[in-house]
Amino acid sequence: MYEASYSFNERKTVRGEIMNSENYQELKSLSHSKGQNWYHVILVPRARCPVFQFEVTKRLCEEALVITCKRHKIELFAYKVMPDHVHIFLSCPPRKPILKVCAMIKGGTSYHIRSKMPSLRRYPRLWSKGIFYRSVGNVSAEAIDNYIKNSRGNDWHRTRSMQEKLF
Image (cartoon, rainbow, N blue to C red; front, side, top):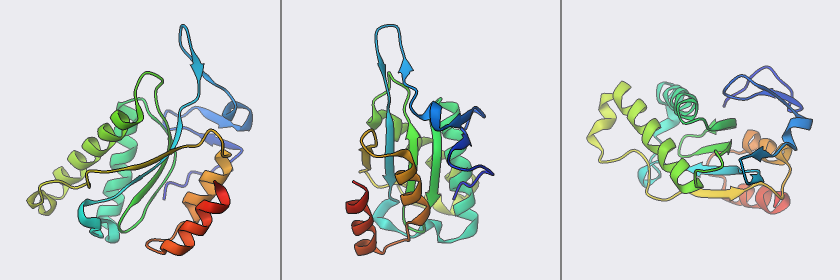
């Protein structure tokens, strides 16, 4: 999991900006609009294969997430790579829809991981076709960060009860 040396009240974004609890309430502005695009995203490898159970592929995925988000100007607040899925807490650029952002992340991470791990090229694709995303405007950012930090693999019933408490 991405763990920088910060408390949740003061963190750095991927671009290195300090983000504290006051900035968390800040809205992004365009010429004629103002808003907040924060999402909790879960990406699953094809056939829920435990690709990231090995430390090498886990590190490659973490590295690929950071690089891809920097390249596309996506603010990455927190992420955790599990053996068979990845949790991401991010902020989308205002003019990019969440499905397009997820497609960019999936494409960029797949390219990066498969270029470094030729053994994964034999599969037609790294990620499954679908995604899970949820806007976190009505849930505190601390709750999402806590959920990502405390999630445990395929423990579906525990994960479901945590989601029901948070959302």
